Image (tube, rainbow, N blue to C red; front, side):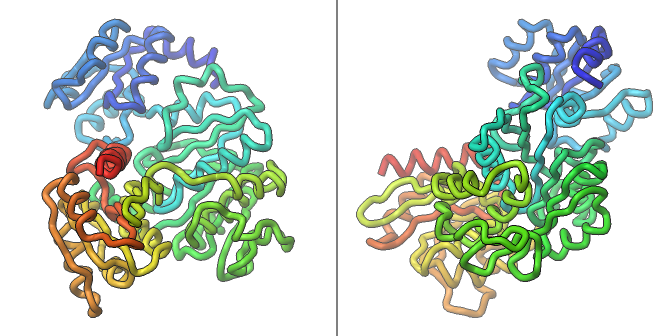
Length: 448
């Protein structure tokens, strides 16, 4: 369905949009402009300035604990954090209500090729690299999804020869029935098991990114991950694989990255540090191969400084370097981040528990950390993992606030040390998102 057809379809339809966060406000504006009768729904009683904005659009509101009661609509758009099998949503579905999402609509209406990235780790950096490579090559590009801002608000500005690059979470993919031109799964490890019923459901959600591809589409296959390597038999189109350990189409011998047998990129040219970022480059090369030139990849490698909140250098004070890696919302991400540094880290970690194991994080913390400052609900499981690692353990201190954590870090760090925020947990116990957490950390560090 093209945009013109959808406008005719949606006009005068009764539409409910659940969740009034950043992903749905542009959607509500668009649906309202296209003539839909929109009801904006949110569990919160107080939605701040959004209330006046929505009322000015002529949008009805359903707020508070019973926000989904007595809703009678033709179409319901869910926010990514709400499961589509919520009892109230199931009741609507039984009545014939169409259940969809902002991302499903974007995939249905987008006129250009979509490059989509998901995975347990590395998806934000990989998405950013694909975007930077395509943009540097000269394409008109649009970046969004789980990174940046929603693209649905720009849908009428996107041309058929443009490129859309989107990051997708397992929440967004859960009920997706569309797949992109180029689908990337960076890796799959246990994650978000506080939301998904189990690991199998999480894997199925990730696989939705390539489930509906056709023969002319491309799937990027990680041969080094136990789960993703099994997906080769499920791919319906072109497969391009990458590996450190096996003969993938794109591989690395530790020094150079090769693509289809030819030397493609010297890893020393990559500005952002860490073995995990070499993986991210191999993935992005697979996704953009044939779309961008080798010289473009080299230029991006030498100039791209990384994404905000991912091993982001904040400042140096009294010989101590401060890094913000608030995006590290799982143990695997913190393990990857710690691998970049020597045994001189004052680590701030902890946050909301996602129902996943922290057993593997103990040894990397012991190997690289001299002081561990814990804050948040996962403090106990992280400390237990460290104490169980059977090695010399770092000094462990509990903090009650980020202000206190940063103050302790400054007191404990000596010249040549690194103070690192790498929580290994989500931010939702204290913050709305990891960006808010990272920004507070940076503000506190810059005030020292």
